[in-house]
Image 1 (tube, rainbow, N blue to C red):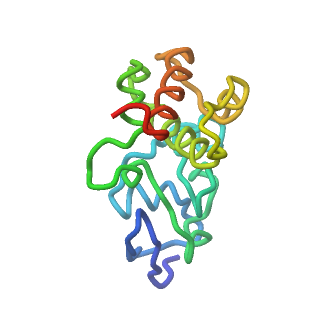
Image 2: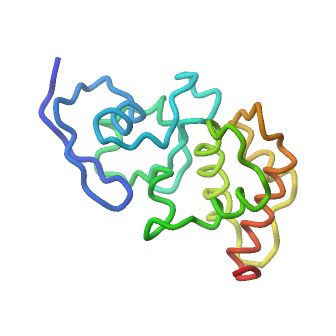
Length: 165
């Protein structure tokens, strides 16, 4: 059963969602209706983290959120974390650390790390290993290995502090 179209605010812009169905997940709407394929569709159970996005700055598995529940909220996807179409600091750090292999888990990990770094206190310190592991615990990676991902978080934190150009 189709409902009236609604508008989602995604990556700073308003997007009309045509032919909407109330039961559609935010992941489905982002990928199939709005043409934003960066968030990956894997488990559809909130277990792998590949579909992670930020809703009002909070990391969520978009496969578990009804799109209609995101109306009136700010959704940020992997496509929206880099202003001007360049690489975001976390993306640059993942490349520098070699923390990207097959890339399927990468968008979710990047969103988790971006959220973690956004939430850190401004005292100039890196998040400790346990904090990083907790922040990325909802993301499964089978190819890269978590050592390089942890290194990438340290690099990204250094970039945000202005320690790297």
